Image (cartoon, one colour):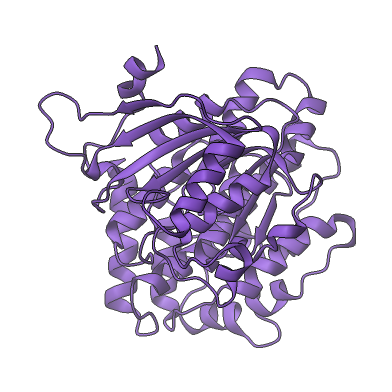
Length: 407
Protein backbone atom coordinates (compact mmCIF):
# COMPACT_ATOMS: atom_id res chain seq x y z
CA UNK A 1 0.00 0.00 0.00
CA UNK A 2 2.87 2.38 0.75
CA UNK A 3 4.26 1.88 -2.79
CA UNK A 4 0.81 2.51 -4.29
CA UNK A 5 0.38 5.69 -2.27
CA UNK A 6 3.85 6.84 -3.26
CA UNK A 7 3.15 6.37 -6.98
CA UNK A 8 -0.19 8.17 -6.74
CA UNK A 9 1.42 11.03 -4.83
CA UNK A 10 4.22 11.32 -7.39
CA UNK A 11 1.73 11.37 -10.27
CA UNK A 12 -0.32 14.07 -8.56
CA UNK A 13 2.75 16.23 -7.97
CA UNK A 14 3.97 15.86 -11.56
CA UNK A 15 0.60 16.84 -13.00
CA UNK A 16 0.16 19.72 -10.56
CA UNK A 17 3.65 21.19 -10.68
CA UNK A 18 5.01 20.37 -14.15
CA UNK A 19 2.10 20.51 -16.59
CA UNK A 20 0.21 23.73 -17.39
CA UNK A 21 -2.63 21.96 -19.17
CA UNK A 22 -4.23 20.30 -16.15
CA UNK A 23 -6.46 22.42 -13.96
CA UNK A 24 -7.85 20.77 -10.87
CA UNK A 25 -8.19 17.32 -9.40
CA UNK A 26 -10.99 16.10 -11.68
CA UNK A 27 -8.83 16.63 -14.77
CA UNK A 28 -5.94 14.78 -13.14
CA UNK A 29 -8.21 11.84 -12.45
CA UNK A 30 -9.54 11.81 -16.02
CA UNK A 31 -5.97 11.86 -17.34
CA UNK A 32 -5.12 8.87 -15.17
CA UNK A 33 -8.28 7.13 -16.36
CA UNK A 34 -7.37 6.72 -20.02
CA UNK A 35 -3.75 5.90 -19.23
CA UNK A 36 -4.67 3.16 -16.76
CA UNK A 37 -7.24 1.81 -19.22
CA UNK A 38 -4.63 1.40 -21.97
CA UNK A 39 -2.04 -0.09 -19.62
CA UNK A 40 -4.40 -2.66 -18.10
CA UNK A 41 -6.01 -3.54 -21.45
CA UNK A 42 -2.56 -4.22 -22.90
CA UNK A 43 -1.49 -6.34 -19.93
CA UNK A 44 -4.66 -8.43 -20.22
CA UNK A 45 -4.12 -8.71 -23.99
CA UNK A 46 -0.61 -10.07 -23.41
CA UNK A 47 -2.01 -12.62 -20.97
CA UNK A 48 -4.69 -13.72 -23.47
CA UNK A 49 -2.11 -13.97 -26.25
CA UNK A 50 -0.32 -16.61 -24.18
CA UNK A 51 -3.35 -18.74 -23.32
CA UNK A 52 -5.54 -18.42 -26.43
CA UNK A 53 -4.68 -19.54 -29.91
CA UNK A 54 -4.67 -16.79 -32.53
CA UNK A 55 -5.74 -14.10 -30.06
CA UNK A 56 -4.68 -10.59 -31.03
CA UNK A 57 -5.33 -7.21 -29.45
CA UNK A 58 -7.84 -4.84 -31.03
CA UNK A 59 -5.40 -1.99 -30.35
CA UNK A 60 -3.16 -1.30 -33.37
CA UNK A 61 0.40 -2.41 -32.65
CA UNK A 62 1.69 1.16 -32.77
CA UNK A 63 -0.62 2.23 -29.92
CA UNK A 64 -0.26 -0.81 -27.65
CA UNK A 65 1.11 0.30 -24.29
CA UNK A 66 4.00 -2.17 -24.50
CA UNK A 67 5.28 -0.54 -27.70
CA UNK A 68 5.31 3.15 -26.77
CA UNK A 69 4.93 3.54 -23.01
CA UNK A 70 6.90 0.80 -21.24
CA UNK A 71 10.40 1.97 -22.18
CA UNK A 72 11.33 4.60 -19.59
CA UNK A 73 13.72 6.15 -22.13
CA UNK A 74 11.16 6.04 -24.94
CA UNK A 75 9.50 8.88 -26.82
CA UNK A 76 9.04 12.04 -24.82
CA UNK A 77 8.61 15.81 -25.16
CA UNK A 78 6.92 17.17 -28.29
CA UNK A 79 7.26 13.80 -30.04
CA UNK A 80 5.20 12.07 -27.35
CA UNK A 81 2.63 14.83 -27.25
CA UNK A 82 2.17 14.65 -31.02
CA UNK A 83 1.95 10.85 -30.84
CA UNK A 84 -1.03 11.19 -28.48
CA UNK A 85 -2.78 14.28 -29.82
CA UNK A 86 -2.14 14.52 -33.58
CA UNK A 87 -5.57 15.42 -35.04
CA UNK A 88 -5.65 12.54 -37.55
CA UNK A 89 -2.78 10.15 -36.85
CA UNK A 90 -2.53 10.43 -33.06
CA UNK A 91 -3.52 7.87 -30.45
CA UNK A 92 -6.78 9.60 -29.51
CA UNK A 93 -7.84 10.22 -33.12
CA UNK A 94 -7.16 6.63 -34.15
CA UNK A 95 -8.75 4.93 -31.15
CA UNK A 96 -11.90 7.06 -31.37
CA UNK A 97 -12.44 5.55 -34.82
CA UNK A 98 -11.12 2.06 -34.08
CA UNK A 99 -12.54 -0.72 -36.24
CA UNK A 100 -11.77 -4.40 -35.62
CA UNK A 101 -14.13 -6.65 -37.62
CA UNK A 102 -13.10 -9.81 -35.73
CA UNK A 103 -13.69 -8.24 -32.31
CA UNK A 104 -16.36 -5.61 -32.82
CA UNK A 105 -17.58 -5.55 -29.23
CA UNK A 106 -14.11 -5.06 -27.74
CA UNK A 107 -13.28 -2.41 -30.34
CA UNK A 108 -16.56 -0.67 -29.49
CA UNK A 109 -15.48 -0.42 -25.86
CA UNK A 110 -12.23 1.28 -26.88
CA UNK A 111 -14.09 3.73 -29.14
CA UNK A 112 -16.51 4.61 -26.35
CA UNK A 113 -13.70 5.22 -23.87
CA UNK A 114 -11.74 7.52 -26.14
CA UNK A 115 -14.89 9.28 -27.22
CA UNK A 116 -15.71 10.21 -23.63
CA UNK A 117 -12.36 11.27 -22.12
CA UNK A 118 -9.80 13.95 -22.87
CA UNK A 119 -6.06 14.40 -22.80
CA UNK A 120 -5.28 17.52 -20.78
CA UNK A 121 -1.49 17.32 -20.56
CA UNK A 122 0.44 19.92 -22.58
CA UNK A 123 3.96 18.82 -21.67
CA UNK A 124 5.28 15.66 -23.28
CA UNK A 125 8.10 15.59 -20.73
CA UNK A 126 5.65 15.60 -17.80
CA UNK A 127 3.55 12.97 -19.58
CA UNK A 128 6.59 10.69 -19.87
CA UNK A 129 7.24 11.08 -16.14
CA UNK A 130 3.62 10.14 -15.33
CA UNK A 131 3.76 7.12 -17.65
CA UNK A 132 6.98 5.93 -16.02
CA UNK A 133 5.32 6.18 -12.61
CA UNK A 134 2.30 4.17 -13.78
CA UNK A 135 4.65 1.46 -15.02
CA UNK A 136 5.45 0.89 -11.36
CA UNK A 137 2.14 -1.00 -11.21
CA UNK A 138 2.26 -4.59 -12.50
CA UNK A 139 -1.32 -5.81 -12.47
CA UNK A 140 -0.62 -9.26 -13.89
CA UNK A 141 1.95 -10.15 -11.24
CA UNK A 142 0.08 -8.73 -8.26
CA UNK A 143 -1.26 -11.32 -5.84
CA UNK A 144 -3.98 -8.90 -4.81
CA UNK A 145 -6.76 -9.11 -7.42
CA UNK A 146 -8.32 -6.02 -5.82
CA UNK A 147 -5.27 -3.83 -6.28
CA UNK A 148 -7.12 -1.60 -8.74
CA UNK A 149 -9.70 -0.74 -6.07
CA UNK A 150 -6.89 0.06 -3.67
CA UNK A 151 -5.28 2.32 -6.26
CA UNK A 152 -8.54 4.11 -6.95
CA UNK A 153 -9.18 4.55 -3.24
CA UNK A 154 -5.70 6.06 -2.90
CA UNK A 155 -6.37 8.40 -5.81
CA UNK A 156 -9.60 9.65 -4.25
CA UNK A 157 -7.91 10.18 -0.90
CA UNK A 158 -5.11 12.14 -2.58
CA UNK A 159 -7.52 14.03 -4.84
CA UNK A 160 -10.41 14.59 -2.45
CA UNK A 161 -12.17 17.20 -4.52
CA UNK A 162 -12.37 15.08 -7.67
CA UNK A 163 -15.81 13.65 -6.93
CA UNK A 164 -19.17 15.39 -6.81
CA UNK A 165 -21.30 15.85 -3.72
CA UNK A 166 -22.61 12.58 -2.36
CA UNK A 167 -20.26 10.32 -4.33
CA UNK A 168 -17.94 8.20 -2.21
CA UNK A 169 -15.71 5.24 -2.79
CA UNK A 170 -17.31 2.19 -1.16
CA UNK A 171 -14.86 0.43 1.17
CA UNK A 172 -14.07 -3.13 0.14
CA UNK A 173 -15.44 -4.52 3.42
CA UNK A 174 -18.85 -3.02 2.60
CA UNK A 175 -18.96 -4.38 -0.96
CA UNK A 176 -17.93 -7.79 0.36
CA UNK A 177 -20.59 -7.79 3.09
CA UNK A 178 -23.41 -6.70 0.78
CA UNK A 179 -22.40 -9.24 -1.86
CA UNK A 180 -22.11 -12.09 0.61
CA UNK A 181 -25.52 -11.34 2.15
CA UNK A 182 -27.27 -11.21 -1.25
CA UNK A 183 -25.31 -14.30 -2.37
CA UNK A 184 -25.58 -14.13 -6.20
CA UNK A 185 -25.64 -17.51 -7.95
CA UNK A 186 -24.14 -18.55 -11.27
CA UNK A 187 -26.53 -17.53 -14.04
CA UNK A 188 -28.31 -14.84 -12.04
CA UNK A 189 -28.10 -11.35 -13.51
CA UNK A 190 -26.31 -8.89 -11.22
CA UNK A 191 -26.76 -5.15 -11.84
CA UNK A 192 -25.30 -2.00 -10.32
CA UNK A 193 -27.17 0.99 -11.80
CA UNK A 194 -24.82 3.48 -10.08
CA UNK A 195 -21.71 1.44 -10.65
CA UNK A 196 -18.89 3.94 -10.11
CA UNK A 197 -15.64 2.05 -10.62
CA UNK A 198 -17.28 -1.37 -10.45
CA UNK A 199 -16.47 -2.39 -6.88
CA UNK A 200 -19.75 -4.22 -6.29
CA UNK A 201 -19.57 -6.03 -9.61
CA UNK A 202 -16.01 -7.22 -9.08
CA UNK A 203 -17.03 -8.42 -5.61
CA UNK A 204 -19.89 -10.36 -7.22
CA UNK A 205 -17.52 -11.82 -9.81
CA UNK A 206 -15.15 -13.03 -7.10
CA UNK A 207 -18.00 -14.43 -5.00
CA UNK A 208 -19.52 -16.46 -7.84
CA UNK A 209 -16.16 -17.58 -9.22
CA UNK A 210 -15.02 -18.89 -5.86
CA UNK A 211 -18.28 -20.75 -5.25
CA UNK A 212 -19.49 -22.04 -8.60
CA UNK A 213 -17.19 -21.49 -11.56
CA UNK A 214 -15.43 -24.76 -12.44
CA UNK A 215 -15.34 -24.81 -16.25
CA UNK A 216 -14.89 -22.42 -19.17
CA UNK A 217 -18.63 -22.68 -19.81
CA UNK A 218 -19.31 -21.59 -16.23
CA UNK A 219 -17.00 -18.61 -16.74
CA UNK A 220 -18.82 -17.64 -19.94
CA UNK A 221 -22.15 -17.70 -18.09
CA UNK A 222 -20.73 -15.54 -15.30
CA UNK A 223 -19.34 -12.92 -17.68
CA UNK A 224 -22.69 -12.54 -19.42
CA UNK A 225 -24.54 -12.03 -16.13
CA UNK A 226 -22.62 -8.96 -14.83
CA UNK A 227 -24.09 -5.56 -15.77
CA UNK A 228 -23.15 -1.99 -14.84
CA UNK A 229 -24.41 1.53 -15.62
CA UNK A 230 -22.41 4.67 -14.86
CA UNK A 231 -23.06 8.28 -15.88
CA UNK A 232 -19.84 10.08 -14.92
CA UNK A 233 -17.12 9.82 -17.61
CA UNK A 234 -14.13 9.20 -15.33
CA UNK A 235 -15.67 6.49 -13.11
CA UNK A 236 -17.11 4.96 -16.29
CA UNK A 237 -13.63 4.48 -17.74
CA UNK A 238 -12.13 3.31 -14.45
CA UNK A 239 -14.99 0.87 -13.87
CA UNK A 240 -14.65 -0.59 -17.34
CA UNK A 241 -10.93 -0.97 -16.71
CA UNK A 242 -11.63 -2.68 -13.40
CA UNK A 243 -13.88 -5.29 -15.02
CA UNK A 244 -11.29 -6.01 -17.72
CA UNK A 245 -8.69 -6.40 -14.98
CA UNK A 246 -11.03 -8.94 -13.37
CA UNK A 247 -11.05 -11.05 -16.50
CA UNK A 248 -14.27 -9.89 -18.17
CA UNK A 249 -13.39 -9.86 -21.88
CA UNK A 250 -16.25 -7.66 -23.10
CA UNK A 251 -17.98 -6.06 -20.09
CA UNK A 252 -21.70 -5.31 -20.28
CA UNK A 253 -20.96 -1.81 -19.04
CA UNK A 254 -22.91 1.20 -20.22
CA UNK A 255 -22.41 4.96 -20.12
CA UNK A 256 -25.90 6.06 -19.11
CA UNK A 257 -27.97 8.03 -16.63
CA UNK A 258 -29.90 5.33 -14.79
CA UNK A 259 -32.50 7.77 -13.52
CA UNK A 260 -33.52 8.57 -17.09
CA UNK A 261 -34.74 5.00 -17.49
CA UNK A 262 -38.44 5.10 -18.29
CA UNK A 263 -40.01 3.48 -15.25
CA UNK A 264 -42.96 1.99 -17.13
CA UNK A 265 -40.73 0.38 -19.78
CA UNK A 266 -38.94 -1.85 -17.27
CA UNK A 267 -40.41 -5.29 -17.79
CA UNK A 268 -39.35 -8.91 -17.22
CA UNK A 269 -36.64 -8.75 -19.92
CA UNK A 270 -34.98 -5.78 -18.22
CA UNK A 271 -35.29 -7.11 -14.67
CA UNK A 272 -32.51 -8.88 -12.78
CA UNK A 273 -32.11 -11.22 -9.83
CA UNK A 274 -29.61 -9.13 -7.84
CA UNK A 275 -29.06 -5.37 -7.46
CA UNK A 276 -26.05 -4.05 -5.53
CA UNK A 277 -25.44 -0.31 -5.28
CA UNK A 278 -24.21 2.75 -3.43
CA UNK A 279 -26.10 5.45 -5.33
CA UNK A 280 -25.14 9.14 -5.13
CA UNK A 281 -26.70 11.11 -2.27
CA UNK A 282 -28.02 14.58 -2.91
CA UNK A 283 -26.62 14.61 -6.42
CA UNK A 284 -28.05 16.76 -9.18
CA UNK A 285 -30.52 15.06 -11.51
CA UNK A 286 -31.51 15.82 -15.08
CA UNK A 287 -34.65 17.81 -15.84
CA UNK A 288 -37.73 15.63 -16.10
CA UNK A 289 -36.27 12.75 -14.10
CA UNK A 290 -38.40 13.52 -11.05
CA UNK A 291 -41.62 13.19 -13.07
CA UNK A 292 -40.44 9.88 -14.49
CA UNK A 293 -40.91 8.35 -11.02
CA UNK A 294 -42.61 10.80 -8.70
CA UNK A 295 -42.29 14.44 -7.64
CA UNK A 296 -38.89 14.15 -6.00
CA UNK A 297 -35.45 15.71 -6.55
CA UNK A 298 -33.45 13.53 -4.14
CA UNK A 299 -31.33 11.07 -6.13
CA UNK A 300 -31.10 8.43 -3.38
CA UNK A 301 -34.89 8.27 -3.01
CA UNK A 302 -35.32 7.96 -6.77
CA UNK A 303 -32.82 5.11 -6.89
CA UNK A 304 -34.87 3.16 -4.33
CA UNK A 305 -37.92 3.27 -6.62
CA UNK A 306 -35.80 2.37 -9.66
CA UNK A 307 -34.18 -0.60 -7.96
CA UNK A 308 -37.50 -2.06 -6.83
CA UNK A 309 -38.70 -1.94 -10.43
CA UNK A 310 -35.46 -3.44 -11.75
CA UNK A 311 -35.79 -6.53 -9.55
CA UNK A 312 -37.50 -9.68 -10.71
CA UNK A 313 -40.01 -11.22 -8.30
CA UNK A 314 -37.87 -12.97 -5.71
CA UNK A 315 -34.89 -10.77 -6.57
CA UNK A 316 -32.57 -9.44 -3.86
CA UNK A 317 -31.17 -5.97 -3.33
CA UNK A 318 -28.52 -4.45 -1.07
CA UNK A 319 -28.16 -0.67 -1.12
CA UNK A 320 -26.31 2.04 0.79
CA UNK A 321 -28.61 4.90 1.82
CA UNK A 322 -28.13 8.05 3.91
CA UNK A 323 -30.06 8.83 7.06
CA UNK A 324 -33.39 10.41 6.20
CA UNK A 325 -33.91 8.48 2.98
CA UNK A 326 -37.41 6.89 2.82
CA UNK A 327 -38.27 8.43 6.21
CA UNK A 328 -40.43 11.50 6.68
CA UNK A 329 -43.63 12.76 5.13
CA UNK A 330 -44.90 13.55 1.65
CA UNK A 331 -43.40 11.58 -1.23
CA UNK A 332 -41.16 9.71 1.22
CA UNK A 333 -44.29 8.14 2.69
CA UNK A 334 -45.17 6.77 -0.75
CA UNK A 335 -41.65 5.39 -1.25
CA UNK A 336 -41.66 3.78 2.18
CA UNK A 337 -45.08 2.21 1.61
CA UNK A 338 -44.01 0.82 -1.76
CA UNK A 339 -40.81 -0.64 -0.33
CA UNK A 340 -42.53 -2.24 2.66
CA UNK A 341 -45.50 -3.51 0.60
CA UNK A 342 -43.71 -4.78 -2.52
CA UNK A 343 -40.60 -6.05 -0.75
CA UNK A 344 -39.49 -7.83 2.38
CA UNK A 345 -37.10 -5.33 3.96
CA UNK A 346 -35.53 -7.81 6.34
CA UNK A 347 -32.29 -6.14 7.48
CA UNK A 348 -30.99 -2.62 8.16
CA UNK A 349 -27.36 -2.13 9.21
CA UNK A 350 -26.37 1.26 10.63
CA UNK A 351 -22.78 2.32 9.95
CA UNK A 352 -20.50 4.74 11.83
CA UNK A 353 -20.28 8.22 10.31
CA UNK A 354 -16.62 7.82 9.38
CA UNK A 355 -17.13 4.62 7.33
CA UNK A 356 -16.78 6.53 4.06
CA UNK A 357 -13.73 8.53 5.18
CA UNK A 358 -12.83 11.28 4.39
CA UNK A 359 -16.57 12.06 4.19
CA UNK A 360 -18.53 11.99 7.42
CA UNK A 361 -22.08 10.90 6.64
CA UNK A 362 -24.59 8.76 8.52
CA UNK A 363 -25.47 5.79 6.36
CA UNK A 364 -27.39 2.53 6.48
CA UNK A 365 -27.28 -0.70 4.51
CA UNK A 366 -30.72 -1.94 3.45
CA UNK A 367 -31.30 -5.54 2.40
CA UNK A 368 -34.61 -6.57 0.83
CA UNK A 369 -36.29 -9.13 -1.42
CA UNK A 370 -39.02 -8.33 -3.89
CA UNK A 371 -42.33 -10.17 -3.92
CA UNK A 372 -43.60 -10.39 -0.36
CA UNK A 373 -44.44 -7.59 2.11
CA UNK A 374 -42.25 -6.75 5.07
CA UNK A 375 -43.23 -8.45 8.32
CA UNK A 376 -40.21 -7.97 10.54
CA UNK A 377 -37.02 -5.89 10.20
CA UNK A 378 -33.80 -6.84 11.94
CA UNK A 379 -31.79 -3.75 12.95
CA UNK A 380 -28.06 -3.99 13.58
CA UNK A 381 -25.78 -1.14 14.63
CA UNK A 382 -22.19 -1.67 13.60
CA UNK A 383 -19.85 -0.10 16.13
CA UNK A 384 -16.26 1.00 15.80
CA UNK A 385 -13.62 -1.44 17.07
CA UNK A 386 -12.89 -1.07 20.75
CA UNK A 387 -10.52 1.80 21.43
CA UNK A 388 -10.92 3.30 17.93
CA UNK A 389 -12.57 6.74 17.65
CA UNK A 390 -13.17 6.72 13.90
CA UNK A 391 -12.21 5.14 10.60
CA UNK A 392 -9.42 6.90 8.73
CA UNK A 393 -7.01 6.61 5.82
CA UNK A 394 -4.85 4.18 7.78
CA UNK A 395 -7.65 2.50 9.76
CA UNK A 396 -10.36 1.51 7.28
CA UNK A 397 -13.31 -0.71 8.06
CA UNK A 398 -12.48 -4.44 7.84
CA UNK A 399 -14.76 -7.29 6.77
CA UNK A 400 -13.77 -9.29 9.86
CA UNK A 401 -15.54 -6.67 11.99
CA UNK A 402 -18.87 -8.00 10.69
CA UNK A 403 -18.31 -11.52 12.03
CA UNK A 404 -20.62 -11.00 15.06
CA UNK A 405 -23.39 -9.85 12.72
CA UNK A 406 -22.96 -12.82 10.36
CA UNK A 407 -23.27 -15.44 13.10
